[in-house]
Length: 508
Image (tube, rainbow, N blue to C red; front, top):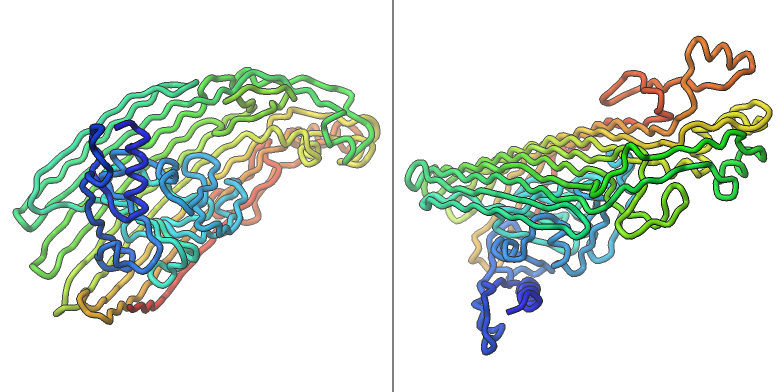
C-alpha cells in the first residue's frame, strides 16, 4: 500500500467515527478488510460509542495519531474538515470551526487585546483556553483527540461557543507492565535536520490497586527559513514619513545592515516535557487519579518568509530579512486531580486542576520604520511637524521590535452527577468554579531617537538635537521599573475572570 492510500484510509476512518489498523496490503486487499474498531468517546461527559453521540464529532485514536506521525496541532489540522487554524508560529494561534471567527489580531499583546476564543481546548478535564495562544499540546501517548463542532457551552463552559478540542491522554493501567520507546531522525528540505525521542512506561505498584504512568519527550525541529543579508537606506519615493510629517526629507540618509543576525535555517523549534499520572483504586466503586504535566516550547527566529526585504529587494523562497532577534519561549505546568465513583447506579465525578503558564516573546518590527508611525519614533525635526525644529529631519536607526512577557494561572473545580447510561431518559447536572488570571507586560521597542540625559536635554532646550524621555509605568502587573532607551510605549494588563458558581444541566 502506498502512503497516499494509507492516508486516505485513515481520513476515511476518522470521518466515519472508526479507526482501523493500517497494514501493508497486497493488490487483492480492500479497504473493507482493514479491521475497523469502534471508538468510545466522552463528548457528553459519559463514555459511549461515537455512533450514539447526537452532535457533529470527529475522533482520532492514539493509534492513528502514531501511524500518521501526528504530534502537534499543525499536524492534526490536516485531518479535520470544518476546522481551521490561524497561526503566527508554533503555539501562537486561534482555532476556528465552521468559519465562526472572533477575529485574529496577531500575537502582539496577545494577553492584553486579543479576543477570547470561541473554541475551547481541554487536556482531559482541564481547560487550556487562552486569547490568541492556544497551548500547543505535544501529542504522544494519547488515547484520542475529540473535536466537537457547534456550541458546547452547556458541558464545556465559556469559550466553547463554536466548539471544543479535547486531548485525552492514556491513563495508568492497574494490571499491566508495559513500556514503549521511540526515536526518529530526519532532514528538512532547505533546512537543518530533525531529531525526536520519547519514552512511555506503565508500572503497577500495588496489584489491582495503584499504578503510575509516565512519558518523557523531546522533539527538535530544524529551521528552514534563512535571514539573508540586506541593507536599509531611507527612500523618499517609498517611505511614508515625509508626506505625513514634513516635505523636508532627512539630510543624512545613513545605511544600516543586518549582517550580525544573518543566519541560515534561523527558525528551529524544540518541544520537551513530561507527563506523570497515578491511579489509585479505592474500592470497586471509587478511584482517584492525579496528573502532572510540564511542557517547554522554544521557537526561535522568524517563522515566516517575505516576498520583499526591508532593503526593498526581492527575496527568494524561504527567505526573510530581520534586524533584531526573534523568539517565543512558552513554558507551562499543570496539575489535575479526579475522583470517580458511583452511588447506586448514579455516577459522580469531582475534578480539579491548576495551570501555570508563562510566555516570553520577542519579534523584529523593523519594517515599521518605513511607515508614518515608524518615522515618528526614529526621526526628529522636519519643519515643526514632528517634534519641532526647522530644517531637515534627523533620522536614527531603523531597528525596531516588540517584547511581550505574560504569566497566567487557571484554577478550576467541577462536580458532576449523571444518571445510569442504560436509561432511555438520561440526565446530567454539575457545578463549576474557576479563577483565571492573566498578567501581561508588553513593550513596543520602536524608539531610536536618543533618550534624554541632563546633558543632551539642556542642549535640546537650547535648540540642539531633540531627545525623548524613557517610559515609566503608571501601573504595572509585572514590572514597575522605567523601561530602556528603545521603548516608546508599553501595554500592561492584570485581568481576572472568576466564576464563583455555574450550574449546568443536560439531558437526552
